[in-house]
Length: 104
Image 1 (spheres, rainbow, N blue to C red):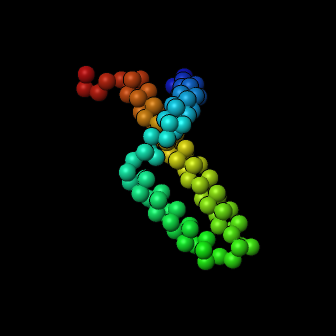
Image 2 (spheres, helix red, strand yellow; image 1 turned 45 degrees about the horizontal axis):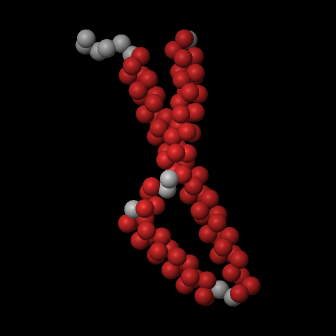
Image 3 (cartoon, rainbow, N blue to C red; image 1 turned 90 degrees about the vertical axis):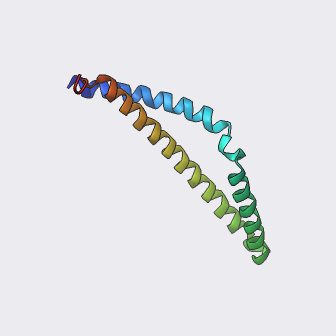
């Protein structure tokens, strides 16, 4: 039972570290500086402009709502994936350090 309790305490500690590192990493928007991201971003802007031209003026707000909702969903997905990967790495590290050595 002590291992389960230790893992729970460590998990909370890891979550705090993950939150801090996530804020540091993504507030810098490092991935947004990549050439591939910039190319996709320009393409998306062009597509949105093309669609906007096809919409009547009184329906343009729907495209804005779509864009805002999609961006929010992507942010949630990115945060989840980053934190999940970080947590998995921290749990693995904890397990490697706390498990008895095999063959040694």
